[in-house]
Length: 472
Image 1 (spheres, rainbow, N blue to C red):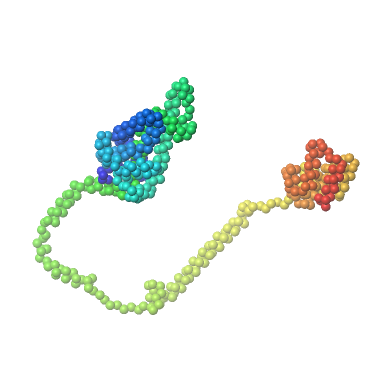
Image 2: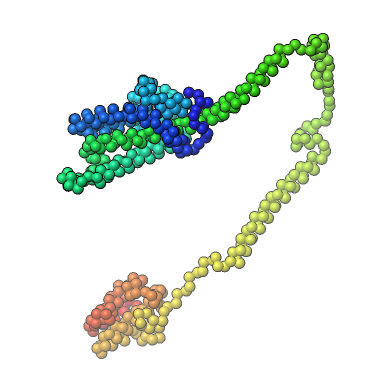
């Protein structure tokens, strides 16, 4: 196989463009590919399905049919590899050359490399190049540096295509199955128990459908991997450049022959008669008399013992050094001024843009009333506990409890610094206060105000005594 004989356009492609090249090759040579592929896959699939049906284990036939995919792939690659280089073999020619595509690493493809996700890309290395063992691994590593990832994703995509076709075929069969037969067989989702359960319960029809799916899709998968392989060979070995040069040479072959003929004629003709009259030795002697040959001259110049800047030989080198130092100092000063100017501009911008400054929190101002009660200290008696106890002895229990509640809230916001707001609830006020006495007082007020359960005089006097101790 010579790159100049290739029947496709070679150029540098991206990996996914290379897979599209393989699909285009399948569209062009699909007839010889499918003829040879069906001639090999058909008998193998029929024999396996018949053996599985006879043994009552069709799932084994499906498993073996899947395991032998690298065998069928070699048929597709054999046809495409020769069609690409201008020699499209027929189905009989493929069978006659079976030893050629079976004896190149088939055992390794069915064992060690069977689960390699890049097998469509690695197949040409073993089948076309004949690489084996360590040499094959090294060759695959070189070719797969920028293409193995695409080859792996190609396998993943193709597996999903096969699964979609299989499920579609199963759904179509269920759709065409008569309702009575479906009820009689107790038809259910074959994949309800998982993939392995579905394979184990597969029928002969399922095996034939799987063989048809392989027959339709597998050639495209192999062709896409082969296109990726051709692209890597083109990038690494410059096949596109070689093809272009060979075609240029073929295009100008006639002109090259004419030029070669004239050159041969000119060289074969005898030289002028006067050229023979010259003496070569005399000519060489005349040439050597030129000033460029054998001429030398001694010179003398002054040089400083301690050389300074290269090229400075005059007395003004000190001035030049001073100027260089002055320039460096001016450069440093310039950058310092630039940094200072930028810092000053940022500081001035920060002053001119106060809106970017985060405002500080406003000071807390005790609300004039909470929960409908006035909290100003001047509205309360000097001794809240004694006043509440006096009201309780007079039988004015609700007023006594309200006075204790107001006094406690006033003490919290005015003297204790508890930041209670009008938006707070009574439960939040209890949590912010963190006082057991205030929690008991709020609980008594809730029962009195909301549940209409007035406390007893003894309870009011107890709360008044607790007020004295809590807010002493």
